[in-house]
Image 1 (cartoon, one colour):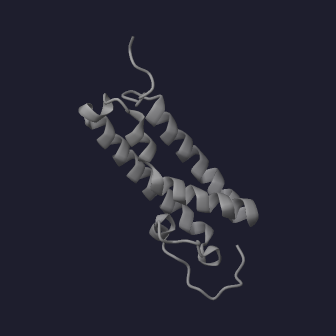
Image 2: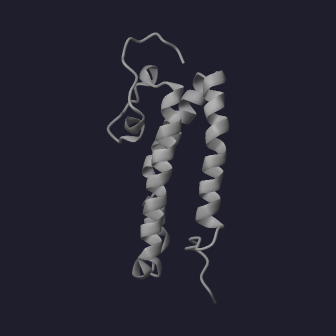
Length: 125
């Protein structure tokens, strides 16, 4: 991270806010990402649990629509992180990447491969 700006670092929960455009990249520190990813992963898990609990919606004509709309906070945090990691990488961001990658993989596996996993495109014949 460069310290060219005098702006105070932004709190982790603000990384995922929709109105944070463009993201104040100079104010984002690597230590903001782990809590932001954890919060976004928890929010996505709650959205998925709500979709899975709604049996009527799960078996509707478009079962993937609610699933596609879920995880927007996780997408935003991931996008900001990817931009910074690609443009201004360093030991700190690479460390965050090593910490967060297994969390993201575990999250994805739990959603699509674990017990009770959502498989909206796979219906019994």
